[in-house]
Image 1 (cartoon, one colour):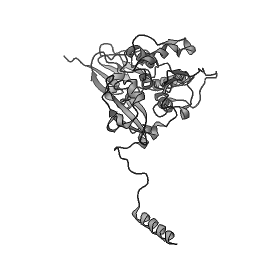
Image 2 (cartoon, rainbow, N blue to C red):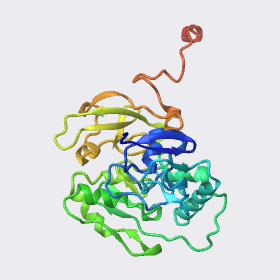
Image 3 (cartoon, one colour):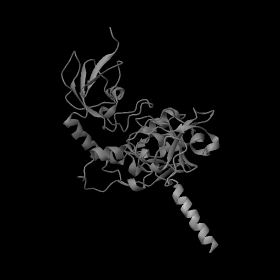
Image 4 (cartoon, rainbow, N blue to C red):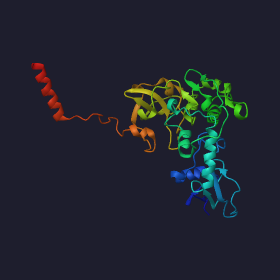
Length: 334
């Protein structure tokens, strides 16, 4: 007897281990049928179930009980059953619900993408482009907060926060003790003073990498450049605190940012320490492995290269160079 269960998502079947969620089953298939996820993070225990962007329709519960589930379910929190059939992008009901979720997320989130450092890497930006409405029905003032400096390296911009709770899970599971949290309720809920104490830990910079929007940003990188003008390169070093495996973001020959490496679902492969992230920004500090693989659907790929020596922007023209030299010599003699 097989220890796998069979689930069909948008007409594609896959066998997965018991206890696997619908979202992770879809990730094993890959492609466009993978539901978006703003709060779920595979490396963070207990994450998921907050943003509701991963809603799917279960049209068949299982072989034993083929009845459909009465409501849309969060795929990051719902485990598969043998014989289950799921509809994601093939369900108009799911697409409509996802548009409503995006509209709700954008009620208070400012559309300041032109000045936000997360632009080009923002999950909400991608969702807004795919499912966002041209106009909002919300007529009230957006909630606003003062910016908070969480130490000297991280800035919290609560106006952009969608309360995905990822940063609080990072602080809870990586730092020594529970010194973080969300205060307030409803539209007054915010990430606030509790998390400021987490800056003392050497892994606190990881809250930047897990934030799906531009609420938590690297102060050493703010307003320095757009990600699609940078060159991401994989590198490593012998670090006594973390794995030392990072991505260096170059502007010319200058390293302007260091981040953890992320997979195709924008989740870090391994958390890195603050020393690697903030203090090691010289090429001599690292062993260069090569250019970072970038999906062709990302805006970063527009300025990407496959070798460490990109072709010159201006191609040399021997005939033109000879003509210029001749003209220069003629002018010089006169």
